[in-house]
Length: 311
Length: 301
Ligand code: SF4
Ligand code: SF4
Image (cartoon, rainbow over all chains, first blue to last red; front, side, top):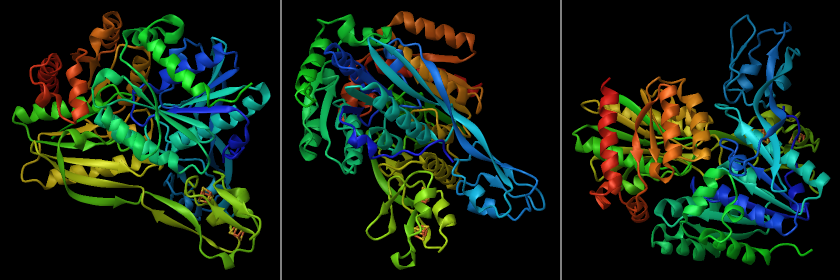
């Protein structure tokens, strides 16, 4: 069993600006957008928190040059078989991911790397032969720079249960948001349209889809637009067309924008200054405020500002 | 049959473009190949390889909880209290649980704890497997996960298994099985790397991509010592590129080569074409050809 359970709907009750940055395809600039929007919000005098939910590859800290400190390990339950075991095989039978090997007349054997921590085995065991052990699947970390706090969830390489990290990260974030009175929360998600991305975005009031004008960009954007449609709560959605002059096929993204009624809030052209800032770990607006890239970020931000809470 | 898997850790560094280009180069070199798209959450390989669908299979790799009938439930709330994923909402008016398809992980705890045995787990469709034929003359197996589902590792494993079976049924075993892996360092990446004879990793000269490369390396080492690395957009930051090359040397990783920034790749992707067809004389294609020659040697050794 897990440390704590999330009450997903508590997020919607927070009276804050919660902005999710996602996009479907990998490498479209989600994290760069998240960091620069956070930076501009902070410059406006808002207290900003970024939650890095790309637990496979959390890169927000790299882009902001933040040294992280670990706040806690994320552990999940794993069974520990004690001597009361009567070898009845029930735990083996209930284990959905098949992490328990039954050995007749002996204690069962666990494959800890497969165990997902649901504790069904402990509940079914008729003789109390299963104690609660734990295994580490990742960690939560924190840091700050430019007056912006970040929370990072990091999956231990090779662990199967990445969504548990996202869940624990959001529970921790919820607590921190309540204690610290943040004005704005930015959530950076993993690529794709799988359940981790769903858990990450849950609670966002605004979702920014960062994409690029290519066929891959379009197909992956379509998947994530479909995913967010499922969230039964009013969400304002905007597409950001990144690397807009990479090709002239804006029509690909414009078609989806119309089909899903999600407006394109702005474009960011290819700009070496964005890449230099990225490689240096500084928001482009801090490093090259007058660059083409920064200007397009500021334009997008000015449009977005209208959607945020007034002070 | 040699099994080669392409991975990167970070998304968007050019895995699909590289897989497609290498596939066409293998074909050009007279090799018989079969491809697997393991990026089940963003399966784009078939687009650029101009595939025609031959066969599809549904995958039921997960289960979700359902109330077998409302009359059975006595309203004890045990399931609601015990669900480790908080996937059950309580309907206070009717005094019975409402199961959320989205949050249910199918662990079966509710089924076990219900004193009246009212809850059952039913298999649900989580994705598709597609067998496709590329107009370039080879088979492409694609795994596709249903939007919002987890457990993509199982779909990757199924896709690879199907590809292996198809390969074995052919009159002569293909020379190469080439897999395009998903981003990340979790379960689906393990499933895509499993059983690989060679792993080709892609990176870019920026700290995030290098960080992610190092993470995926921790996995890759478990499967083979034959690991080659391609640096994409290498001329963007030559200094960082040199640092990566140094790192590769220190760690006995094979540097397969660099791909320069080249807009023809973007234009090709925008049109859904392979860069070889779109811009055969581009500097990117030239770089890919050099890399391909090294890969052939790498595989021979
Ligand atoms: S199967 Fe597990 S996750 Fe799904 S509702 Fe039952 S207890 Fe909750
Ligand atoms: S445990 Fe069974 S009887 Fe009790 S509320 Fe849940 S479904 Fe109804």
